[in-house]
Image 1 (tube, rainbow, N blue to C red):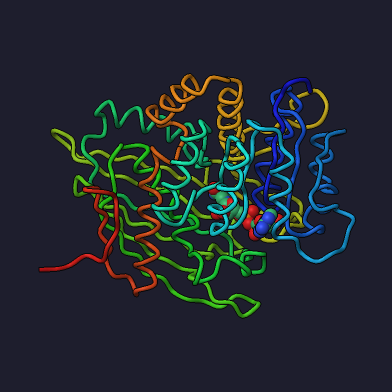
Image 2 (image 1 turned 180 degrees about the horizontal axis):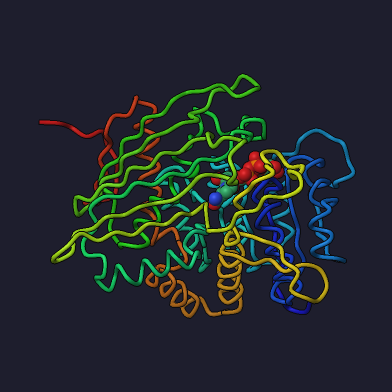
Length: 415
Ligand SMILES: NC(=O)c1ccc[n+]([C@@H]2O[C@H](COP(=O)([O-])OP(=O)(O)OC[C@H]3O[C@@H](n4cnc5c(N)ncnc54)[C@H](O)[C@@H]3O)[C@@H](O)[C@H]2O)c1
């Protein structure tokens, strides 16, 4: 594998299995990264990744170094990531895919070990934590890319170019939905996606907040989130249904609903999409993305054996698929793969620039381009999440975002 950098992946859950690890295996197969090291809290989740039939078939002969040993049966090891990161060479790459509330401490530990970073969204749950990550990364000349993979869906890039060329006029209203399937309630979500830590708006609503900012370049100025508490099978409570309203600096408004509420019996793997309306010179403008139904329908001999699999289905060919494109194994395609590839390749480039000033110039360019979400160019997301958490815990009160003298959030005062 020559000089290709090591990748340390912290987190061995669903997103690692479905998107990150297949993408990393492909980057390894094509020589762009070196050894893959994965740290989880439990041996069982690492064992499940190692023994996964689909991954074995797609990437024959490839594997990873695990922390802890997948064949051990000790208690959970929530601090083991420190060792995994300390073992990595300086200026290698860390990918962080743990529950939302752990992104901040684990990202900081990775930075202290001089790793370039890819962090699953949301980067952090408060603006202050996002800024702390940004400052530490800048001081050390390290790249932090936040994995908002919808940015790498070609339709989002098309919309961004067209909006910025003035073709959609001025953004006025948007409605978006992203509902995850009901069976998520039975998964590990019930242990962390609970009222005191996070909620469905924070977990997935942030994608559509980021889409509006990515497409229009506007900044959000106020947030209110109404959440309904529901009980998971293990008795924990989560805000499993949320309805958020985000107002933007030009007066435009996004309304987004999120839930673990897409029926298991439904044909899609989830339910998602957005419609935006704008004000043109002589007419209204409109953009509509069906992000779940992509024009493909299958009706098979029988349902698959995964939860929520149905005989009749509407598979999404665009997010993440492992396809037979000749050669050994299978090839990952889709915006899920492109997103990891883009961020990891940027980390590889940053890691290959020894001079701090030159590396900083490269990081400045990424911040300014705004294609990869970085702590500096996507701090609107942390502000919205911080405001959203305040709002949902206060029954939906409106929380205002201010940018001067310094970015902050506070309950809106009415005259
Ligand atoms: N659409 C998206 O962009 C998208 C989709 C899914 C998940 N995510 C994000 O990915 C993150 C993980 O989600 P998931 O669905 O994989 O959750 P999950 O519950 O399936 O997995 C979480 C994993 O985190 C690991 N973990 C927890 N504490 C740890 C610790 N101290 N050290 C090492 N590992 C630890 C465990 O291995 C666990 O398996 C969340 O932040 C989520 O918001 C993003």
